[in-house]
Length: 407
Image 1 (cartoon, rainbow, N blue to C red):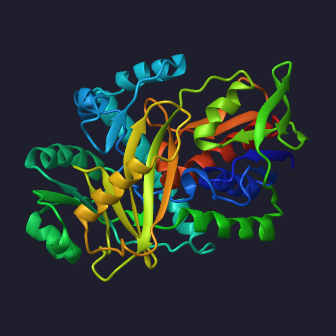
Image 2 (image 1 turned 90 degrees about the horizontal axis):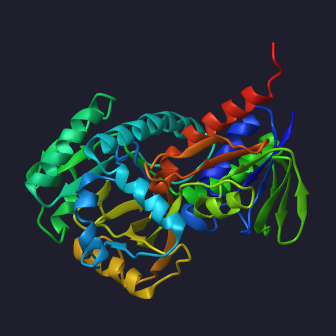
């Protein structure tokens, strides 16, 4: 069977390698890091497998609050304008998807993808260990109007098997006793019994073992990809900092770096990096068992083994972002205010920042490109971990169909 290169060893690239290997392809994964998921969004993301919290980022509420985000009045969400034409083109399309109809349509499309992914991750969990847990998720709402709006969308999701339940404050406390130590008031919550959690970095590392042992997948780490070489609109090679790898087929799964690499092959992608932060601390006895999302503060808490992962913030601005100590301290202070007794904030605090590759409609881009032999599996936003198995399967089926001999 044909050889195919996977560009990127994050969770999307690794699951792509798995799905293509199962189809019989000879697979080689190329990445700049020294191992899988050692950088980028797969290293220290929120840890939640949010199969039923697939809300598109572009929404009526985001559009309504845009002036506040531009003025820096919301600590959790910031928008900094940039002169980049790509940013403005993406922004216009993003706002076009912020209508009620577009938001609901995009959310349900992503939900259907997430449900297929859920099955794949459950099957793979029997072969790969990654601190997998099925403890459900509680989404907290500070005010009744927010809860009411979410309940309308929840009713729509329940038609697809979400079985989400609206909880009063008292019912939420009964469901998750750790909320006794919640540092703010809340009006109610939504309980998602089928949402799960896990360590995506550990998942990728152990998936590598499976891929090498059972499928003969090769890995070329420490190879930073510079550009894609084509001839007559056909893929010829992938050039890294150290070598040129001749190939006839490749998949770009480089997260937020997909768009600039795709441009070297003449492909323009509507993906913009949205920066987020996380911290990982030892979990204490008062840490929540279920995953918790605080909607007012746009912060999530997820127990991963004996650790507590806290993630949040969304900064939209120049593509060349960096770790900002002030933004991380905002997340740390927010976390302490929400669950002051959930983790050891005075112990080892592991900080992280990464970039969510967001499309205007929040839906991943999966499929062939105008360059023969070049494919995409990218643009998963904050749901790469959640959607990875579905998009990998879709990609593998498409590639297999294209390369199957005609009857």
